[in-house]
Length: 341
View 1 (cartoon, rainbow, N blue to C red):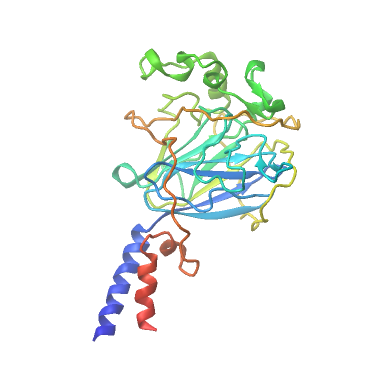
View 2 (tube, rainbow, N blue to C red):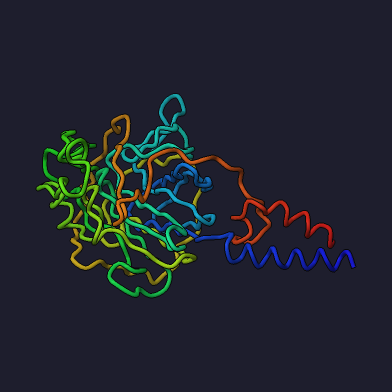
C-alpha cells in the first residue's frame, strides 16, 4: 500500500513538472562563417541558466533548457581567445569574466541582444532583439510553430549587417561593431534619461532610425515598443540563430570549448523589410571596458529585461528528462523514484 501511494505521488509530480517545470528550450544556431561564443545573463530573481557561456563553431547548434519563469538576455561574443595569462578576451560582446562562462556578467557594448521573459504576464512569453546597446552580429529569434500575428509568435530580430552601413562616428572594434548613439555620445536625448526618461519626450533620432530602417523588427531605442516586443503563449521552444541570412566574416583565434551537434535543417528565416549586407572581414580590436545601462520596455512601460545579475543555481541532474531537469524539485523526484526501485 505504501509503495502504491509513493507511485501516485511520483506520477502527480511528473504531471506538474511536465506542465510547469520547463518553460522552453533555447536552440542556438551559428550560421556565421566563423566561431561565436554565446553569452547568457539571467535577470535578478531569475534562476541561473546553465551554461552561461559556450563555444559555437560555424554550422553547429546547441540546445539549452530554461526553467519556468526565466528571464534574461543572450548574445554572441566574437573574436575570443586566451591572452598570455590564460584569460579569455573577446573582440565584441566580452562579458569580462575572463573565461568561457559569463557567470552573471553582462555584454560589453556594442552587442546585439536577444531578450526573453518567459511565463510573464498572463503566463505569456515576451521576447525581442535589441540594438539599444549597439550591434555586433545579426540575430533572429524563431518560436516553434506558426505565427498568429505580426508580433504574436512571429520571428523577431535583425538579419541585416549593420556593420556595413554603420555611420562612421558609431563604428568601433575595427568595423566589427556599431555603437548606439547613447553609448557613443551619452546625451539624454539618445539615452532616454533625465528629461527624456519617458516615451513622450524620448523620440526616435536620426541614429536610431538608421538602425530601425535596416532592422524593423528590433528595438532601436528604449521606447521603441509597438513593432519590437513579441509575445507567445508560454511553453514554446525558441531557436536563436546568429547570422541567419547575411553571413559576416567572424575572425577568431579558436577560443576554449568543445564542438556542438550539427544544426537541424530547414531554417530559412526572413524578416519583412530586413536588409542584407556583406561583412567587412576586418580583424576586430579588443573591446572597451564596461557595458550599456539601457534596457527595453514592454508596451505597459514595464521592463522586459533588467540588467542586474541573476542568482546562481547548481546544474540539474543529467539523468532526468529536460522537462524535469529544469525543475528545482528534481532531487525530490529522484528520491521518490529511488523508493520504487
